[in-house]
Length: 106
Image 1 (cartoon, rainbow, N blue to C red):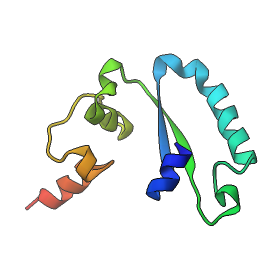
Image 2 (cartoon, one colour):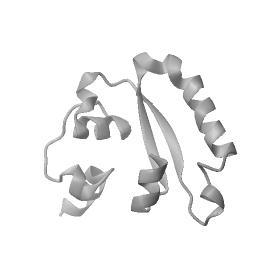
Image 3 (cartoon, rainbow, N blue to C red):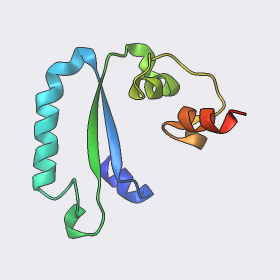
């Protein structure tokens, strides 16, 4: 994820962890801490001006959150159900429903 973020110029990635896998949370935090200590995550990535951080989002979502718009809904704190499109996530990105809702109001 760090490499992909660097390639596209992102500064933040999100790891979505379903609630039933919450027991993995301490291990994931430990892995991220080791990556930060090694300079592979956080500010000044590998002693460059690049920065990349990974946030862990613990969701209550079920299998339906494997569908991209349901996953985004869950990340936004809503019920993890698929949303109507457009906008398509590939075109509008994360939190697009909030931007489009603001834009489309008269």
